[in-house]
Length: 404
Ligand code: AMP
Ligand code: MG
Image (tube, rainbow, N blue to C red; front, side, top):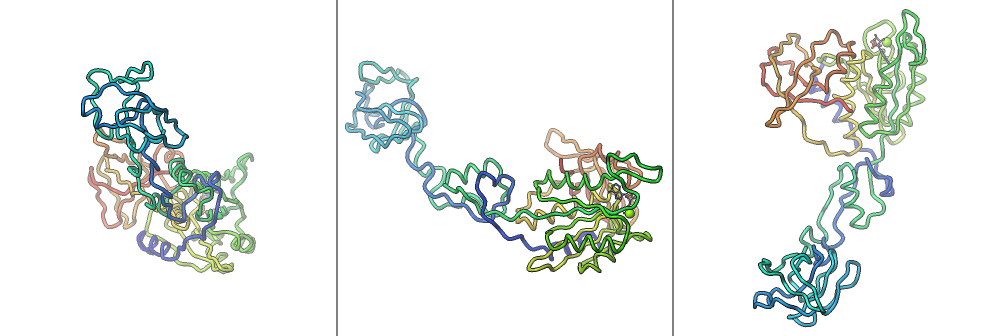
């Protein structure tokens, strides 16, 4: 049996990023950027007025002039106008280019405009550069604005639009297949016989993946049959980047997955991890035509399955999608917790915040790894190291949120 850290390492060392593709910016939301984006010109590209008012030379104000003849009007979207005389002014609108010789904008609220003259109101305080958003002050031309690996949401896409990128290079979306196994499992709409249960893991896996942004998902269910399992796995492998199986991976007499996967040509990297829940976790890869398929076989118990998805599969998917990982979250135990077995414990917790912004984790007392009803009251789990058995109140542990 290997440790959680070893399992994590054996997965990471096999993962390679998916190739990239060009997509229209209109359909790039939720994709991972695969190229750096640079500003194509200074931002703002010209000295722009930040107010509606007048533009003029500050020197004339400093010399005591309060009344200025208006010699023109500068509109947003019109070419830059000229300030002919340093003792005159032009009317200017927000977003319009400021004339070359002007270095101050006075707000319309601070003026009186009458008979072709603008007069400053008494007590108006001004300075050189006031009211001007100067060229390049947000960023100079050529600066890197976004790095590969960033997730494209509205704010990143607005940057891409502003620098003239109608198409973007993004990582290809992983093709994911979910395969559940079990003779006892029936459809959601079925009325189960006394010995049957309705399937729920496949839906839980699919919805978690969708909320993490993965859309390219197929679902399959197979009975506990070696030949059928092998045939299904073989038929899916070639067109799948990440294969997630659930159930049939433990030591039961009809747990055929490890054998079926190896028969289908998947190379096992490991099985059995010193963790609870999720000990039977199996991971391997398949070398298809020019590209690998990563195969995770998760235990069927709903809590084990859900926990292993969040602890191993979602981070692996982020990595193959080229996504830069966000900061890890940590939470403090709200009470002392004891756990003796030499296993890493993934402990479901109810999370709360205090006034200093610290997160507190209140452990859920739950029965078995099958108790998915209680887990629904939690927001995620903390990871408690197998090297200790007493975890004092207030100690900080890595927190993994459930996808929402
Ligand atoms: P297994 O890992 O196949 O031994 O399954 C362990 C437990 O999880 C059994 O009680 C199964 O009935 C249950 N289980 C397996 N797959 C699913 C599923 N797709 N939905 C709900 N429960 C499942
Ligand atoms: Mg089973």
